[in-house]
Length: 201
Image 1 (spheres, rainbow, N blue to C red):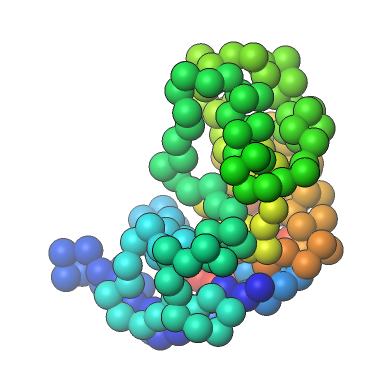
Image 2 (image 1 turned 120 degrees about the vertical axis):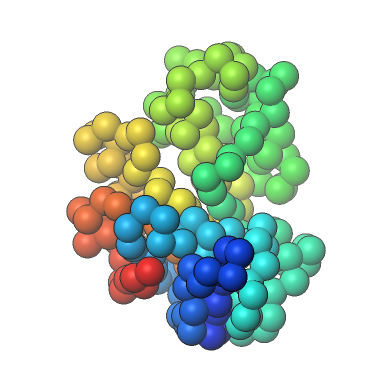
């Protein structure tokens, strides 16, 4: 499934953040959103998933204006944004099992936990995790559910070199599986390895 924007514009307090922005990411493609801090990368991603509303232009899902309440959209799009939250009173493994169940996924939760390096803390509550572990939980929350579109805000945050190498391989595998990937990043190596093209803000 495809996701993109047409002639998109957004402003804070009348000050333009971005304007006249158009792109589409198709199945099996990856688009990297790059730019300096404060350039609007996170805002653009929030607009793509319906968490913010564009001032001008249109978010396009499968070529049609986005309806963020659509079951098809919510079933297709997995995202990790800068305001990720978790169920505080269930363990890490229970959190992922619940997400998998809610989305009708047959994904092996134990395998995903091992892949993101959280097996040792599977029985802990999310508030007890380090910031890096919570970030990995956010990534696991995307990978434990079905998805046709993946939207990630700086997914390399708080990952060590081995974690970044894993992330590059994982996003390449997502592309190979036909997932449309949009991600904001400051990691030039990740962008070079994964992105089919870039959008600069």
